[in-house]
Image (cartoon, rainbow, N blue to C red):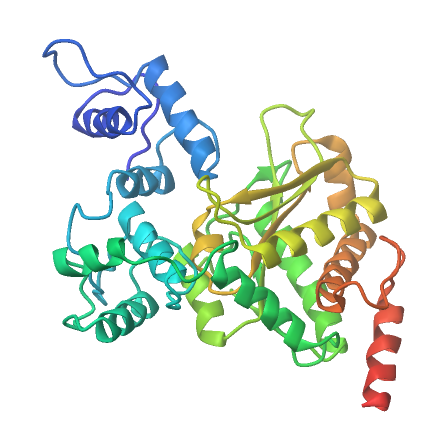
Amino acid sequence: MQLLHRGDIGPAVTEIHGVLVTLGLLPPPNGHGGPATYDASVEHAVRAFQQQRGLITDGVVGPATYRALTDAKWRLGDRSLAYFVSRPISGDDVFALQERLLELGYDAGRPDGIFGRQTEHALQNFQREYALNSDGICGPATLRSLRQLTPKVRGGRPVYLREQEKVRRAGPRLRGKRIVIDPGHGGNDRGAVVNGVAEADLAWDFARRIEGRMVATGMEALISRGPNSCPAEADRASFANEAGADLFLSLHVDSNRSPQAQGVATFHFGTGNGTTSNVGEALAGFLQREVVARTAMLDCRSHPKSWEVLRWTKMPAVRIEAGYLSNPEDQARLLDPGFRDVVAEAVLVAVKRLYLLGEDDRPTGSFTFDDLLRYELTRAEGA
């Protein structure tokens, strides 16, 4: 779709304006004028919405923001919900349905606002147990029953408790863990480009360095794209889901109009309505602290985001922005192969810390690749 920003006018802007009014982010229009204009008030409302939803807060309506706005206008009960293979239904009403099923003890998977196969199965199980027509369609009768029942699960989000339990059961060894490494951009999409240095190339280099270290410890490392391809976000998530990955790591560097912007940041799945992947948040925190401790880069902290590749993956997912190409200091670091080795080691150690669950741990920044190899060998001999 065409990007919408300040100064634009037309039917698409009128549609966006109407959704923002419905969400209470803009006052109702006065009178019956012509098509709405994308003025400063609309830009401010879009920024507020983006901040609420964990999107990039740029005040521009691109594909991700448009989809989020379209999803936000639906409330549970506004329409019947069902699973369609070719065009899955998405929206805040689907999210509310998934949350309700999870509260009642039915495993609808991660509440991502997309009516997929797992949501259909959970709904059918609910319908079957409560003597409803088990057609997997959330219509008026099913909705009434959902609203009348008392939740079985309180004090936590069960889908994320299952994630934590899966990590606990996996044990501390890295051997056998399946990780999808996702180098951002690729092919004709070069990402950020500064002074001839492209984000896509750096992300690919990071991916290969991380892959080599993971394989050496006995992990199964899968890269989501080739050196000259750029899969869509949905395809990257599908690749990880179909592979049955334990973790998903997305690799990027950043750019900004201000050359003063610098530092490293990590991101995990989380929305503005309180949903957060606990394991993803933990991994993002480990990764952030390890990189900062080893490189002395500016700490831009970890943040929850509802970016599509984080939302559509069924396993804990983390994205790292390992510096700003637009900042001279960060660019000098990124061009140094030794620095990229340090970041690759930090990624591996962060994954190890996740599975250690606090046991046999060491101070941040002190674990080395050789330490991990010895740990894996010792555990293997003791098994």
